[in-house]
Figure 1 (cartoon, rainbow, N blue to C red):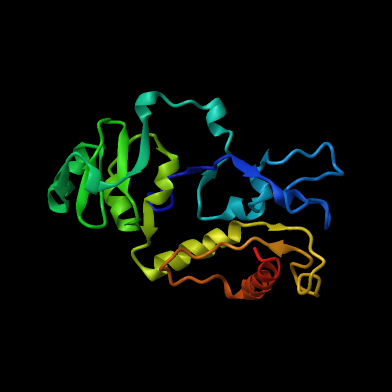
Figure 2: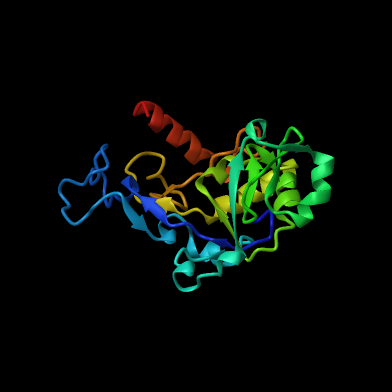
Amino acid sequence: SRILNRVLVLPRLLCSCEDGLYPGHVTKECTAPFHDDLSMPYMCLADDVLDPLELTSSPFQTLPSTFFDNEQPPAADVVTVSSCDPTFSHKTFSTSAMRRLVSGNVSMGISAGGLWCTSHSSRQVLLPRRVSSGDIRIVLGSVRALVLHLSASAAQAFGRFDSESEAVSFHHDAQRLLEGWCCSLRIPFTEDRQTSPFVPYLLPPLPGQVWRGQYSLEWAAESLSVLFAQASD
């Protein structure tokens, strides 16, 4: 959404073990044996994961997950984005040839290797796996449909940002949106810190990206690494 300057309709979130209200409330099996009214996993609200105040001031443009419950766009205004493998496509074209065609045909996608794959549907865009942000702009930037619907496989399409500065900017802005989990009795989360005894959610870096997390949260990343190692998880 950010690469294409589109508004993101937040996905519905499935939450589970993080709903513990106190240490020991939820077991390692994600059950709460002493809390009959708590059923997990469950559909949770965005503010279980995202900070509402940061969300309203963020460069990311968003709408609530319930938006389409009330606003159903016409089918002609919806294009589905999926991933594909051009090596198994029934037809491939060179990048130079497809650049000339993409503006008039939304059923095609580009691969990092310079090959494109085609779709049988005019309402579908195919993106090969691990493409760059620039490739996404080439293919999807010309699509004028009101809604781009990302299928489950579309998550495999994005591979990298075109520049380190773009990657760092995206990850810093995304990390600011994340809430945290309350509460931990473990040091250092119980020490006198601004977030204590809050355990912040941390955004992991993408493979091959220069961004390795915000410096101000390095202590949390190191502490969580130790705790996960102790738990053999």
